[in-house]
Image (cartoon, rainbow over all chains, first blue to last red):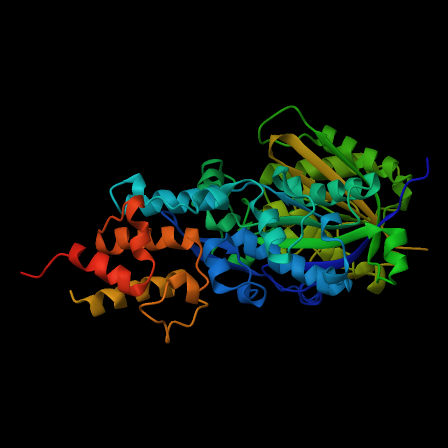
Length: 412
Length: 84
């Protein structure tokens, strides 16, 4: 059966180092980190990645007050993506638009805030906000977008730990192929730095980054890396069936060529390189490609001592028979780990490579860990490539979820 | 606490709950919902803020007293502690 082709036609994003694709890309090419330090409740200052978009660009003050941070991030990204795509929602059947947003977690921020709030009133629950439930339902991020844009089609989030950004896009492609919707707003979002629980959890796990210079705290593949920098962010794409995009003369960023999602089924937190390798292999097969076709790999590596090595083991294993290595990079040195947004956001930072043939580097590698020294790694300086026709994007998450998404240059 | 003072405290709360609204020309005798974009959740916010800021409880049966600034002042002023 002939596969329905799915293409990316618009991008809206906010990252700790950029509030548009152009700004984000420029900073990835010039080595600009967006990591700063923030005051974490009960824990003091820690490195984190915070976004600087203007929430009032697309929301009223009251909506910002009632809604959640991730709702605001989602609305900003969705509106920016729509503007970029040239789609005029006023001319569309809004019941045929789907909103599919990946999230690592949701509700921690809002619950912690309420517990703190009632702690100021001797834990009397009559001071607990009536906004708590709409703020903490798992579909909050997508629901706030539907409210803001008046979209009446399916709008929900997809919980997939830190693989969620990829999975949001994959799910949207599937819904478009099934004919459930005609246009999808899809990607991933995160508000995680607002919750102390995630910082405390990673710290107790010995997986929270620490460095006197916050811009050096996230350092995938470096020998001295010591953990994750928690960041917020969002990236939402408009994606469409190719024939619909062509019919309206849309700009096309790339085509979804293939994907795979699987599970380790081995541990709550520790990755499993065997299953990661299987995920990458199956995505390549799903795209109808071979390892020779992959030009650029965006790694998930989060700057933890073990996780980075495990992914390198998986990639080396999959690509070991290749004549020359693909280019390999990582985005988290610039922006930290944007959790549910990571897959979608990191992909966006690499899509311009189709046009400029430049591979942005992974930064903060002062001493490359020899166990991460895989062929093709682009370190500290951007590199000109002879060819970038296919990008492979890895995103993995807790409870052993793995996702690989492959985007290819659009050729009619 | 005068009724005018009480109206001012209610306006202070509304300013936080409905920050997009212009409250400069609000008419005390007109229903708040007829001159401002306020919904039922906003009124719950007003009730919550009265509880938090001033220790005043407004039972659900009395919500109708919060309809206008005038009715708010009429109902709420006696609930504020009188100065010794």
